[in-house]
Length: 55
Image (cartoon, rainbow, N blue to C red):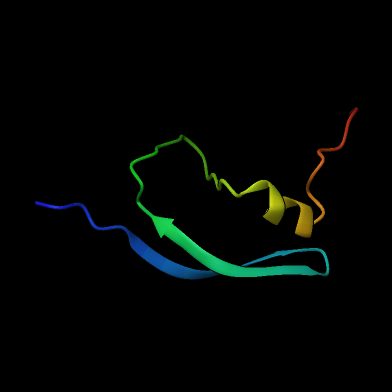
């Protein structure tokens, strides 16, 4: 049986910045807490990259 990815529309909002795109659900990656992996260009759009340094 061929694996089929389930894609959904998402909206990520950080402060006043918003990114709308498509995400893949249930990729088989598991964590003990909530996790989202985004491309660097999306992190830049949301003001999350480069990461802050220090405490």
